[in-house]
Length: 344
Image (cartoon, rainbow, N blue to C red; front, top):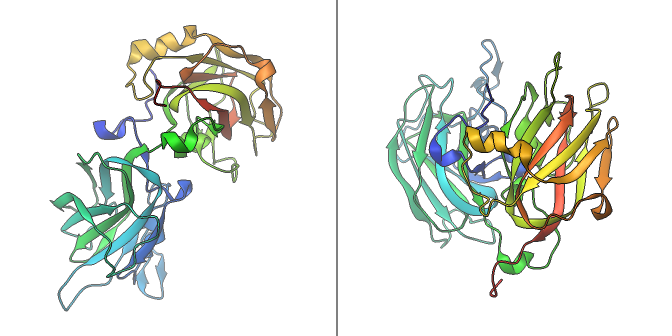
């Protein structure tokens, strides 16, 4: 059985969380965070509940929580997305908020180079009308906006707590900004995303495409120990169809559990946003070889330059094979976006 990293609502299957703190999203304004700070709501880790944990203001909660309102109005916060992008939908997660969740929410967005100040003349557009919320639940809500946004404003009516807030979408790559430039085509900030994998028992597989180096052994993709034949693999859709010139595979913090070796297969499927089915996933094993099998070492960055890569032209997807198992902290695929017609 193939593990699916996207066993959620359809709008999130070919998207990343643009409100991920791990990718750089941050809160820029909040009306009230008396019980729990806004920054917790943007964490990548799943929320937890600690029965006997209290702080000076009351029960410790893993998320954003405002105090009880007594004079009317409602609470809201402003979040700068990790990267400008088009939004497909949201997950407003009230996990563990049972008697203190907001009964409803609504969401606005704007496109601004600077962080909007409260009460300024920033033009906000409603992208999610008021929606009911319940206790201790994920609330997936689709968004049909096609515009590019930099910030979202989450209103909760009238007050309460939200454990996690995810904004699913796709980063916007400005053709003028990337034309002829070398970028990391696999970066989550450029729209790279993981489609499928053989195993992801340990760590946080989605962090393999995150910026920076891994913080520890839990900050990357790691499989369980193989006891039989075969090898592990992971399929990545690039942020844009491109020509890969250099590859970096980082085994940071993987010292007794790094893969012995690796290889990369790649294919040009024409569209980076394709939704894969079982047949397409199985077919990845027959893709052309981009990087022949290479030895890996513990806790280091491995750079494979263009002279080690096979010239297979533009690609949209890659399959990273590791032999036989182990952990990869980060994958970088440096190259240029492929020409896309005369106006590119």
